[in-house]
Image (tube, rainbow, N blue to C red; front, side, top):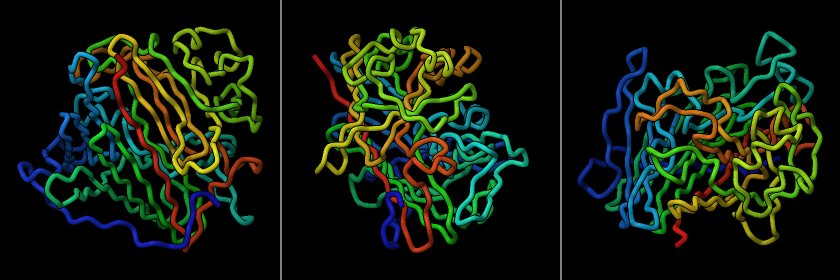
Amino acid sequence: MIQAKHLLVLLALPFGVAAGQGGPERSAFGVTADGQPVERYVVRNGHGTRLGVLTLGAAIDEISVRDRAGRIANVVIALPDVAAYEASSTVGSVIGRYANRISHGGFSIDGVRYPLSPDPTAIVSHGGRKGFSTKLWKAEPCATPDCRSITLRYHSADGENGFPGAMDVAVTYALTEDDAVRIDYAATTTRPTVINLTNHSYFNLGGDRVGGTDDQLIQIVADSFTAIDDKRNATGEIRPVAGTAFDLRKPVRIGERVASSDPQMLLGNGFDHNFILSKPAGDPIPVGARAWDPASGRTLEMRTTQPGVQFYTANHFNGRQAARDGRMLRQGAGFALETQHYPDSPNQPAFPSTVLRPGETFRSTTIYRFGVRR
């Protein structure tokens, strides 16, 4: 059982801290296609670092941090408006119930089959067409002076998108004084189900209004990865990274590896692979990845309690989607470090279990810490 403990009461925070009180600042962001209002919350620390979150998809739309010259810029891709987020719902959002892919159109628990698609050969990605990234979440900003966190909640009905069990989910975003964004996930269920939650932010450490991330460096603390097939689903095979383009144990230029002729890279049209993180004993939230932009000096360190991270180089961007800053998004405009369990775990008995049962609480933590290298 993954990240599961005996049932605990989920964190409850009072709603309604207004701008000017030192806590989260709330503003209107627009309305959905069916007329529902979307809110935006912003918190900041004493360095001027800003974290922005939307109630639509619980999406992060801003992490503004300094470069080596002290200039502040947003290092996550943000979209212009609600309509753009509804059209590209995974950008910056919380993905669920099951991040990544599930094959065979569904899964079984305790001998009971749960179809997620009428097609038994279908691959269901990121929870299906109306997954958590498309939902309006209820925001509960912290209520003490100078606090810097927002909890977003969503109730998923039993049977939503084919998944069993009514599920209550809470995601808390917190900005620390040392420029880290901490994400804490918690969820409970009324029936046995599967769960795999992540955040799908795209990072570009160069900031907004700059080119892609090919010249930025990536390091992932992983000795192996899960191989994919021609549908980009996990085959069940775990492969060593040694001697392949997937050996990211030392910092490498992203574009150099994406351009390789490794058959797995060709299948993914770039990186779209789950790396199995190497976890030292005694560290509850170990480092899983590091990134660095030599031009700006900005650095990123990712820590997580999850066993894997999906490294994705935004291979689907094709120049037709505009970012909020006006640039057209192309392949490599950003990279995602989606901390999670392995893809297709419900259909891969050798992978760590993603089953959550009544009376248990799913919990995981991911921390993205930003810095500057002179």
